Length: 342
Ligand code: KG4
Ligand code: ZN
Image 1 (cartoon, rainbow, N blue to C red):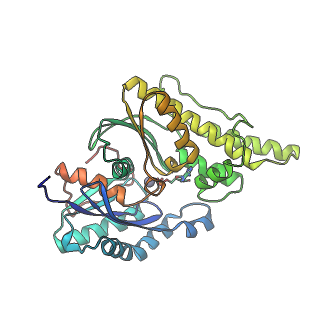
Image 2: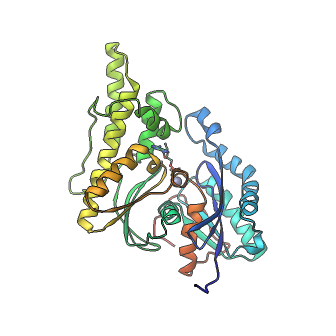
């Protein structure tokens, strides 16, 4: 039996349009995970409106934190550290979480640990997979990022591939808007695709010369828009489910193809996915099959831990805390924070 004291971390996430707080024990056990989503507000505008996001975070953050503590049966006096996302993201949104975390840290003298949002997404995999330890390869696919990352150790990341233009989630959102599905597009394309044929229309699968792990999604997005325009000009009705399924298949094919090439080249036998797009059912099924074929163990968080949440920030904060990372009250929001920077 371990004699080490449990480390309970209060985690805060406010980088985009979810106000979230969680209490996580020893990086892996979620005692509470509260998410207040602003999606209904932003969908009126077809996307996240930064000013509205910041204001809503201010309104909600205290309530969300109290609920997270309450559900976990904790008070601020029981918390060993505060983890907070300080980048990348919308600067006004990030500032709300960072200011809140600093205020609590100062008032209660609790150590402060700033967390990179993508490190949070990757760490979501630790929560439900007690056996997962670095090294492993992780594909991070969110609304703002598409990265292939070698996780060398806790807190040690090597980005081996990235998108040259749109992020995968951004492409989902833009295509969804074009076919009239509204925001956020990913889950809607996922659902509609189940009624369509993914082989109905061939959309391009981009490869980048001399950069086998990089991605480009602007071509597939333009191809969908051109296809829709062509149908409109010819007066043809569009089968939206076929368009959604064919687009989704094109994106999944590229993600799986590049990730499996990296797994082979780097001889890594553990592969994980992370980020909002990682909750896509077709993508999960495709990786399940590809990993089995390649003899690789496949890890993925539950859908609620794929999209933005604070439990993943608590998981990441734990390993940063263990590595001795402590931030001062000069911690600032860094909208373009690079992975691996401290
Ligand atoms: O990780 P996340 O919540 O926020 C960012 O850090 O960006 O990811 C949000 C993105 C959005 O683009 C959303 O459309 C996409 O994840 N997404 C999905 C699905 N659920 C969310 N994309 C495809 N299929 C889904 N089921
Ligand atoms: Zn995210």
